[in-house]
Length: 302
Image (cartoon, rainbow, N blue to C red; front, top):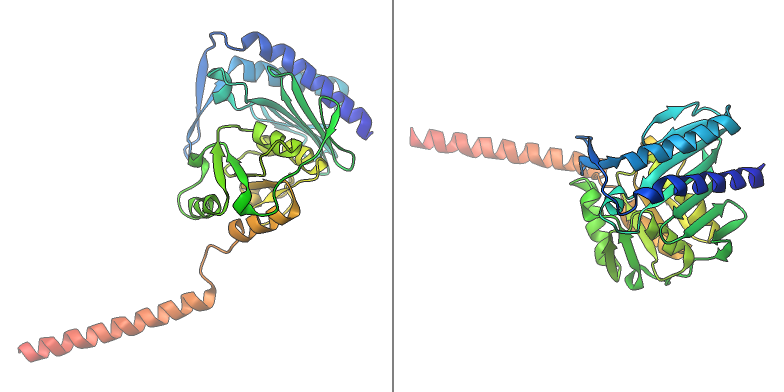
């Protein structure tokens, strides 16, 4: 069944290319989606995004009508099914509409909520990464593997943008990991995960505020190549734990880098309870002393 589904995933990617390429570097109307609770509230969407997802959804419904679908543009159906297809027709629409060939079509097949097949397809550069859990990752049919340095201080780290992190905990931790790596880099969207998987020189990707469709396809690609990809607490990225992970992901070329990254990203943000209790007690003590001094001064003036 896995081989059959992987073959079908490639058919979906082929169809996506046919829809996307006629729009590439051509005049195209861009609409804005606004989600006020996100660090970057506005995101673009085009007819290419919508028609690509429509085409893939139609193929899934025709071939596997009992399978679930979870797409960026047209929502969810049957997500309690054994097999669920997760689709992002154009991951990196901002790159697409500005003529930068670092966007990609993301296609994932989940079994019981676990990503088992993932495709990153870059139609302009004619590059396709296919990851299958337990069977490896290929780039245009040839096996690839991560390489990566041994420590974060020598590592090259990608994020799509530093503006994707919520103020507070996320920005604090992101600044800390930026300080820990050799160099932070920006602007690659899903392509960053592909180059980590290929061993081309990138070692780590750290991101937040991602939708399920933004990362499900990336997990089999990265892990099939020998890397590791989890949420910031080191937990598996699945359909079931998406809300708990809150779209915070980290992908690393090897386990050593991952352990270092999790030590920074997964640290408890809130103060331990005994420290909070101590602070409350100390605050009450200082308040009582302050009131006492104030009363003494008041009496002295009288």
